[in-house]
Length: 486
Image (cartoon, rainbow, N blue to C red; front, side, top):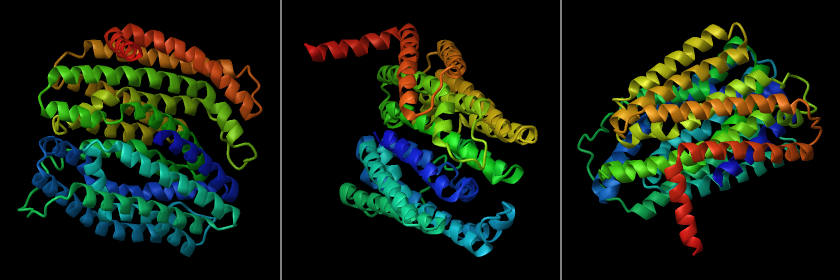
């Protein structure tokens, strides 16, 4: 449910901001956020390492160890907060020249950078440590509710401010204040709910603290580097075009991945308890659900994304938002990322980040190298190809690693299932894009009608594939359903 509301809010906000301020202003705010996010490289993947370290003490109810780990996380991120403050001031002073800003003066640009940085600063000052603990303790239902409420409040706040004629700086300040309240809630909940004892740190350090760096860098580059490269080597209008498509595709990823909610924590608990049979059953269930949901959602998106963007951006003429080839490449990269969620999560759950780090190192190298080479040929397609190639490499590497070292069940069948799934998605997306060109979609009602037809066809083909690949898991699901009916 959180992902659905996040998607709806995410769809409304860019159109409101672009309609009110233009593509260049929207591109600038997106670009500033990405520049500020580079400070997260200093986190070194501590979040995933910390979750891996928390699973065992949570399973055993060891509050003293939980408290030590939480304290270590909090101490680490306080240091990051100080560095982030300095980094924000540097970006504030120099972004005007880096991006060749023409729509704001230097002082206004500095203020905009400060406003956009406030949410991250509150995160480092306390929110991350408590959110990490809640995620490791499988409290996703609570964190999802908080995120949903704050997302809705933020959307309403932005719309109201825009209607009142507020400038973009005031809008971003309002957004920051909304998200600061989210961090305050996490801090208060952990204090009241867990009642952790005050223990001496005694020099405690998170094991594998820096071995999560590879995974962290790769994820960071996957999410952020494209916009940074487009800012430097293209222009802010291209950043706006990229951001609109990425918003749609990433929203589909969020909705698809919602069906794996709690997967990492569940795997971690089973691995900590050495319940291998239960781990295999759980892995099969999650993989089946992810494959079915992701195939349907990404297959439909392939057909419907360009008509949607055409309707969504109607009346906006300061940039060319109709980019079907770019949309296809970006969609495939996020789909691959989604299909590989189950086995890419296993190394975190098993606390084997160090052993699996080369998958992330390779992803980062491929992404940056290819993007830098190809961006001079075509900015949008260049960064999309770099991202697609890097995701493909990482998914194959982690599939082999998890199959051999964690599941210990071989990876031949995993590779076969992956190849068939990916081939069907390519066929669905390409065929859908081709077929939709013969339909005249001039309003959202006709787009929704086309969506129903696309879902029916895509859903049928996806279901046939899943039944073929996961017959055992399907039988178990049907068996449970029939028992409940009796």
